[in-house]
Image 1: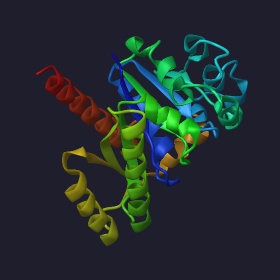
Image 2 (image 1 turned 135 degrees about the vertical axis):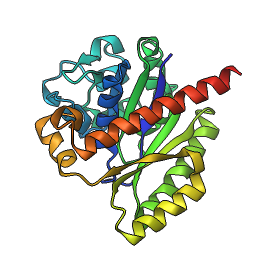
Image 3 (image 1 turned 90 degrees about the vertical axis):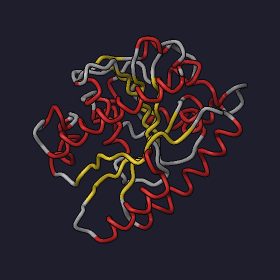
Length: 261
């Protein structure tokens, strides 16, 4: 059964979609069966996977509206994982499903139909707390939070953890923070080091040892519709995300052992 993980942060510009795409690609390189679900109307994770968002015959929108089964909407990519893509059509879904019963659980119910086919399902969330994002958080087992080590990012982190607590209490009892990933990391910056120390004190083992550095290849890769490991596999960004994916796999194995004990 798949590990289903949301990549989320209510603050934009922290490397959320970059993490979703590059984590999915790195897990695929590690021979894991991966599905990337784009739950952001901007469709950046779709484009970053080398798929033209406006050319898709079916998207996550069609799944949420109940117009096609999820298996029909999942597409192959050239970068090793499968994709449930998104485009601007997703913006109108919230109003369309607002009056439905169990509207918060549409994605969860859909993913249950395919989770046996994957080792990891990565869900890229929009930065806003909408019904679409609530659907994502109700469908996953855990949240991975990418964040920059700066003051305003800490404020956004507090808001997100409160949101996760509310979702856990009302909709998804198993939801928890499974990791915090430091992105755009510059160890020469004193504030970066200070915030990093605070994160380590608060999150302990949930803070990933791997950090994602500022890297020009990482920034350039989306323009080519490629995860960085396929764009420039020797770059610092590619090496970091592959290391991070390896760390995730190890953490997942530890959790599974604990559950079976």
